[in-house]
Amino acid sequence: SATRTSGGIAGDFGCSGSLTRQTTLPEGGIDHYNWVLDKNDILPFRPSCRRTIMDTTLDPRWQAAVHHSRYLANLLQAHPELIPELLATWEQPFTEAMLQAPLRQEFANDDAVRTTLRRLRHRTMAHLVLRDLCGLAPLSEIVECMTQLADVTTNFALEHYHRQLVTTYGEPLDKAGHPQRLLIIGMGKLGGRELNVSSDVDYIFIYPEDGD
Image: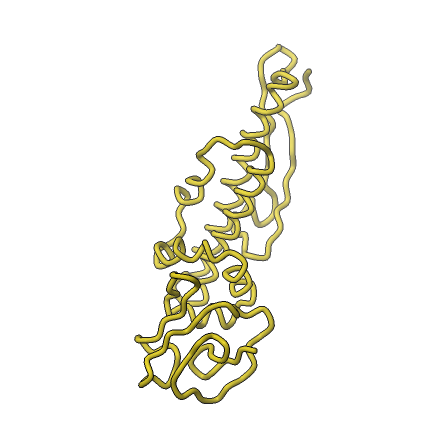
């Protein structure tokens, strides 16, 4: 079983050294991380302490975020491959270009699309949780990034499935026989560009006019 100390995580994580004020680690904690602690250190988050998954070292500044967010702890445990990407980018805001990058590829099937979109959401949420709980991101950054995530993924899905359906059924046409595209209107917090991490999204799907 794992325990938490006044400075971090101990117990079965491979810590050595004197540890004090132990409390039970919340269920869902990152129980396969290993601590590497200098024998002269008292608290795990001193600079010489490292926590690793395989060969990946976590930034000790993540302590507060991992402690306070069970979502983040569970996500890193389930997807340790996210950690190197987070280490490289978490000190800067997540940009629209970073959101779009994993979507610029050819997808073998719909399962690959869904997997990529789901991973992008995980990646973005982990980035925001770290920046928020570590005191790096103001509220304006959080809501703008969540809105961008909805914008980018919605527009990507619209374009991807438009091409797929056109191949099967042809272009939707207006009364004059001109191609027309499905329009998606974001309502509520999405329309106001103030989505937070727990917001759902409300859409209206329309065509410019009736047609064939």
